[in-house]
Image 1 (cartoon, rainbow, N blue to C red):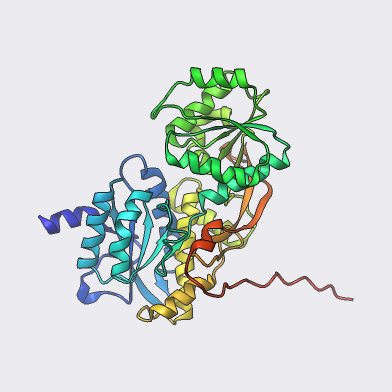
Image 2: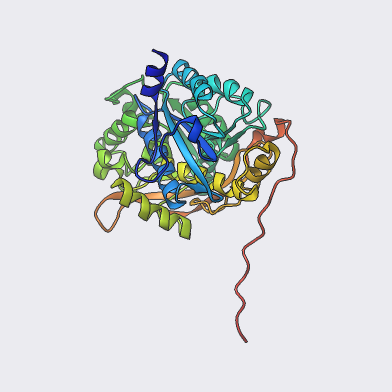
Length: 410
């Protein structure tokens, strides 16, 4: 029964690239576990993270620092209890070196004690539980995903630059919306006139739209995600409010996989995110070409973050010549973040939260007629997490040198 359950939850990634499941007796040098939500509401993001991981591993030939890599994948099914069970059984069954996580905040909270007690490095690509980036920070945990706080502070800065004075936030009736408003107010000097929270699973928004008509704010900031985000935008557009009220959204609700369901209602909507498909750097260009070739669909921020996590790990293990037994050396390598991020600039603050840029993007159609994002500009450069001050870790940050200026021949 025990082995049967584990077999159902753990499968090999990259069946065609050599990163196959093997017995402990024939384990390669480096073993990575990926714990992701691949069933239920979070499956879209989880699967995209996994696909981004796959693309990065294929680019690297399934090797880190010339050491063979094997990857095992576990589905937490959107359950914190299942996540904890899976984590324990992975540790019992596998000789793990690193764990990549793409799960909910409650699931991550449930598995972190298990993973850190086993002295495993965790590269997180999902939500984080409260306090993890502050007083609860860990020497074993590195956050690779862009922080929601950074996202909302960037949105606040964008609204300030656009001289928005009265803003309405629309989000789910969860603590995530409260967090969004708190972060937004750090950079937005105007008035948050109201926070509208439709009931969970809402498909119609007559009352919410009537309230917006009555209030007449300068702009709406949507932090709705999934089907609710799609339905709200379509209702907002159908109500004819776009000419009167600017519609802006956080990137998770406007990932490229969701845009086809929005249709023309999404055109010209401004979104804020840490990645854009048209960021002009070699790593991003190659990532997108390979991702679309392998997966048959455009890449998303989720996939970009999964890709970056693998490249980060490869860069860290190059500094140790592929050795994973020296935890201090691996930690120092991760902190250096010596890799080419598809997001451009990337380094860690002292609480292991990434210092990254945030961008403003506009929804347009690409050359193939598909809805996508077009970069409008940089809105927040090298954002730093405010909770780092509460983190007891103290180490010297690695700040990359500025790019060399081209020298013109006389």
